[in-house]
Length: 185
Image (cartoon, rainbow, N blue to C red):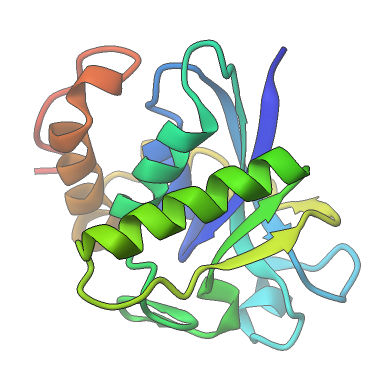
């Protein structure tokens, strides 16, 4: 039976591009979660006044990839030590957050955070929020598969492509299929 976890690691285009390549991931849906405005638009979320984070809702097969493995990837493909920011993207909508659906997901997330903090791979403490899942609002259709459909767009070339290339190199054995090592080059 598939599981769902909702992750915010900055721009949802980056998060989606990485997670949809992992073996065991059934789907990745960009959207918004954690705020107070019902059915927000991208423009509203970008203001930082809705309380929502840009998120990727990841549906996965835990018999192929565990939540622990997903979260280990999550903590290496974004900077979980910067509060409300990822690179040039600044605001609460870009916060690092895990919306967990049950106590087991929460415990797993707490353990992975403890492991990452103990390893000191980031050199600073993790600031990722752990929040019980409430509601997910699907992003507008043009956000779905954004990187795949727009590889030559400036943001995709400068921000997403290097992140995806680094991810592919580091997690090659976990990819659905062999991918080229360079993206958008």
